[in-house]
Length: 221
Image 1 (cartoon, rainbow, N blue to C red):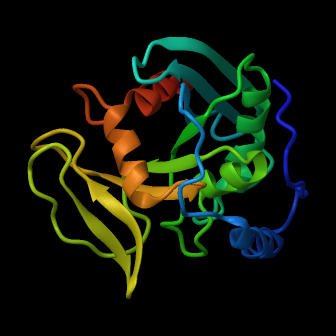
Image 2 (tube, rainbow, N blue to C red):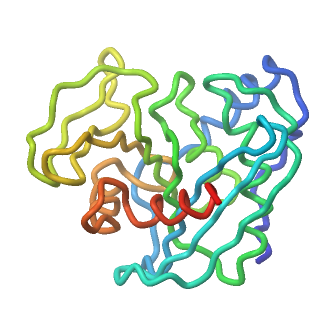
């Protein structure tokens, strides 16, 4: 698949340069709905091998709403950026883009294992991928990076806002009754309310949506 990236920037940068790139690109993030008909959803996850020397990126494409697997791609490339909280996209996105290029079909929506705008500079991996590819994207994180929140009700589908001071940056969503919630945030071209609906529509009987669950299984090898 030819991604036709909307923006280009160097990846072999210092941490200060990476933060500057995030600051520059975050103004491109759209948190209002600008979606076409969603027929193919992609799950994205990244793992590491050889004590972090090799980045392993997995992308799995599912038909929506049936969640039937369509195709998948897995790449292993050398890791070229250190582990720095808040800058994980510089460590992971180059491998993810390589994996996406191996797909035959273009996804209509990306569900990323990580943050969207629920990020110190409002530019997590879901935002980064969404802005570069111009594909609507959602951050689906298993843990909180920042912000405060109450406890959602125990029933599946319940959620409460994730707040950073007075700003709503995400949702704490119960995807399965009685289990730990997930942290959902807009990535690009999608509102928070719509993002939570798609995450729930991609979730069956597990805590993780099928996109994330299948991608994680592939990335974990």
